[in-house]
Image (cartoon, rainbow, N blue to C red; front, side):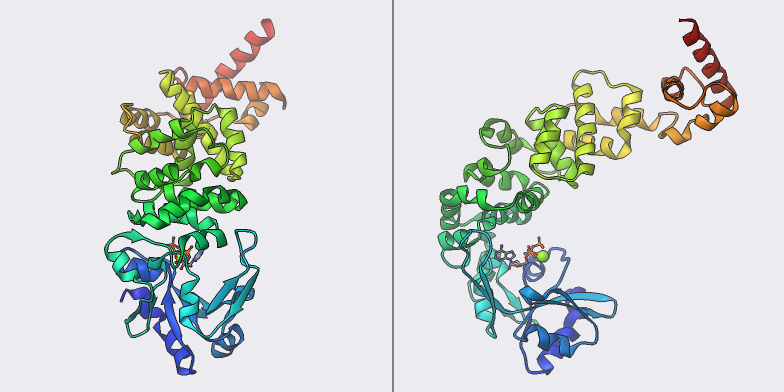
Length: 402
Ligand code: ATP
Ligand code: MG
């Protein structure tokens, strides 16, 4: 067992010692059997939330309505969730009713895919009620129960299928795939924020092109913001370099906006529709601007400076993912050779201009700073205070004359 489980063992033992059942469940069990790195360890139990709280000194009611209690133990946090069943699902997205139950089987039944419905006992034995182990071995993603029904209950599961296909490099079982094709329009019922999470994870998986292939073939794409009618451009994503992995959300969206040939303004409204953060929008806009300049062969030092290292790295990663012939190392070298990397490094600031009586606060000051910055970035001026003040003086007097 990986260290994460061994550290969490006493939690399970405490619950079992009180006469309840407790298991590791979900992604961590799946990933351990696949020998993948695991992140959070989830625990499921027959104990009801109040019973869990009685067993531990420190707990937090994180999601008590859904049966989840956070247990704090030796600086670690564990989500302990009571076995539950879900029913209702009238809106195709969430159950009308969550019922706490004492049966593990009932809890595993409500889970999305067989490989996500395994439970691991504290002694290392695996509870496998839906042949999840076999599907894990064969790299198959298969809905638990009747796929049609499961996607009707919660349409987000269809996006989860394509994201796991990409994340795990698994194929989707035939009936499960057919049910996604058939029910893809139900994705319209799901909040964009939740689709966003799964889409981004799909794009950042180890088998992006496999995920994308399912995403396009099943028709799911057409029910995502502004993807309708975009099958042709989106199909270019199938040619991504399989050895290259996108590692940030910014890279994902930069690639998508570039693939759809969106302008800066179009990218902004497109990303607003996807409800991404403003920070991400700003980075993508900046990246799109650089990509446009690259394609016109008009990348200036000033643009590299304004783009900054972080966005430049994203642009480079996107170009590599696209197997682009652009010489990205030269681009990076040019950035690294910039005499300054931020405005703070300019050896003259607004205060200096005031002290030297060159200008008064206002728009003129901004123009002077920008002029000096240009000069330094293009190598015309040295980044030296007395030289820069001299250039500033000349600039203001020639501006007064004209
Ligand atoms: P990851 O490694 O990406 O976190 P995960 O399998 O842990 O993958 P989560 O979204 O964290 O995925 O969900 C934890 C578990 O809860 C899943 O393994 C699955 O058993 C169950 N689950 C989550 N979302 C759903 C859903 N929409 N329908 C059914 N079961 C779900
Ligand atoms: Mg998880």
